[in-house]
Length: 231
Image (cartoon, rainbow, N blue to C red; front, top):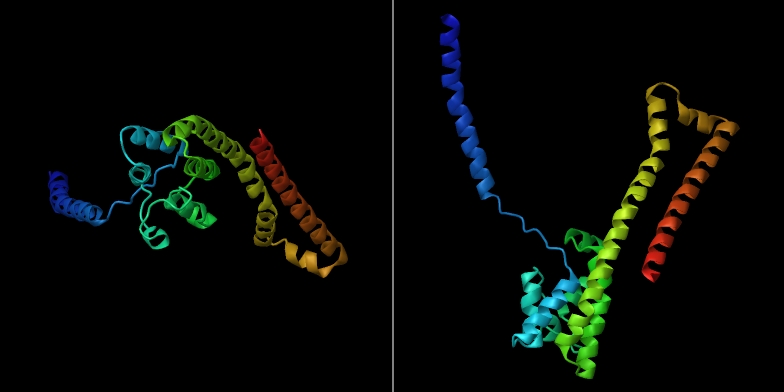
């Protein structure tokens, strides 16, 4: 009987604290502003949507502006072109700004390599339509499928190369981890490397092999990317 009373008292005391804590956590979560997730920029879909808006009666500038605004890409262009959304050659200014971003800024905005590889084709289509007077909607539709397929190919290539790159990165740190574990176990590998000619030779040989392996993996990745771009 005494045990039942103790359990009831503990439950009575602890339940209000838990509920109050849950309320505080809920209020903190509500106060935190929701992070805006950037959308993946599929230039093929963007160009198809622009062509659809053009056929529905929108102007070229309005079609690009509304489509890019729907993708979360808008603003920051007024000071460069006097308030115009399109540049003199017909290219949307926000797309030019994305092209001029550094690799770190592209990573922060989650702009995929496929989208970056599709931007030159989009620029070419805009400039050709602006310079020749060709129907913009027809040109965009004819190039949209090819740009989408090219972007998907780039994404698939990067996914296929992610595994080997990660494995090479992990293997590159194994010698450092081995030296650290050896030091912890009392083997003193650093003293062996610097105290004798044989140890120094082993160190130079290991560093040379490490650098050669990293260079070889880097060369294979660059070659694979170059061959896929040529295809």
